[in-house]
Length: 121
Image (tube, rainbow, N blue to C red):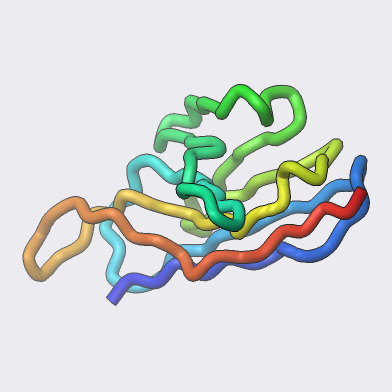
């Protein structure tokens, strides 16, 4: 059984910062891409940032220069440092990881439960 557990959400004023964490645990052989998505009320879930196992990153245009994704492979953890937050960043943030597991052996996508971020103006 594999679990992704997020933490670090909360309420912050515009211009502030938050750091999200997502730790994967369970019977994990390897983790490929790890990413953060967000879903605002009444909208579809969208990719915010992704990081490969080698450390390459990609960002959604609206967060470039403000958000930084990173990972600690030894801890199976991905982070999202969010600076200069804006009210439009308000959403539930989800992490996703592509993980190699056994029984049957294969790569599967796993999601966290989500953590809420609210940015007040």
